[in-house]
Length: 461
Ligand SMILES: NC(=O)c1ccc[n+]([C@@H]2O[C@H](COP(=O)([O-])OP(=O)(O)OC[C@H]3O[C@@H](n4cnc5c(N)ncnc54)[C@H](O)[C@@H]3O)[C@@H](O)[C@H]2O)c1
Image (tube, rainbow, N blue to C red):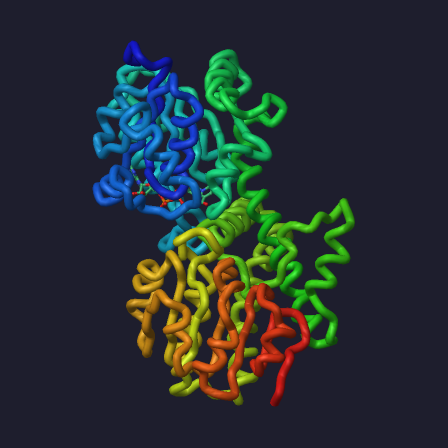
């Protein structure tokens, strides 16, 4: 089905945070392949075809503009795309199931199943189907059963190729990946399909960074990677609470342990808790799988990573409440940052959602600022009662506030003129640096009461 001009036709189903950027990089690196990204959401596809992309990711717009209309296409013609494709990446969402069996833990596989049925119904030639979405271990088995059901003579070879890029650094992660993982069946056709997928990545990824495994190891590795990263954050956050009780300093502890090459320094920054669409979802999926296989102690171990995260978000709120004389009623507070991390507008499962809800419950009046996430913030908080404003300019957001709660460590917040900010605020002025990213001594000298995470407060009170 491949047109003469291109070596192969790649289709990606799901034009979200993963599908859009990964396919943009493949199209940039593989001019000999035609890459089409399809989605059921016309709004999303229209945005991908405009200059205001549906997601913010540094460097992404330039890369889209350099190949869009040449070998990268965004479309809602899903059935046509399936029919023409040689290789189909499935990158639809796999949220936590919120109903029935496994509610709150298992993955909701309805979008995956709908996609599989659509692939089956619209395929007239053999296809390689690549799991890009994060799936429970052995999902490929169910996918194969659906694809090969009925009287369709088309052959489908399923590969697992989980995505390890992190939002905010997605473009550089994909252009220079630590590794690319491909899981396949250990059969002639499985290995042949694996080699076809490897050919794509070999356009820019050194061979030694391509790892091949069996299907189940690949599916499981993605869940485990996210669980281990989140576990490091929860680990250091537990130590942050011990530091606050003992006058130790969590930044110093992190540095001291992180210089041990067996431990390493990454993901050891204490904060208000982890967020994003994947960590909680993927750990809970792992917990569900362990429970399914009756590994209850293992399930309890991983579930604790999530419980500590909930505890940490609540602890951040309690510290604000205690410092501000145990009442927030009618007090104005500026919230610096709503995205779950800097350099993205994504707010899915962001700690800011929980923290703002709790502050509103305490009847604080919030002035929320963020460079890219204000539209999402508005949506996330629309059903929550209470006084909230969304203000682009941080200097306007701080007018008349009693406190600043810094939740996302956007680099622009480090460069603000805090003397000017202090002058605009009510006194006593509080700052709760949830990311330990500001100069606390300098803030204290200006007159702020400074509350970092995991280190002693600097208070004039
Ligand atoms: N966001 C990340 O940083 C990240 C990183 C690695 C892996 N993942 C995994 O990748 C997958 C996708 O995540 P995402 O963040 O891109 O999700 P997303 O919600 O941003 O995008 C998913 C897209 O799939 C579309 N879709 C759903 N059902 C469809 C169907 N039947 N046909 C066509 N399109 C359909 C939706 O409209 C949506 O645009 C998930 O499994 C996630 O766990 C995400």
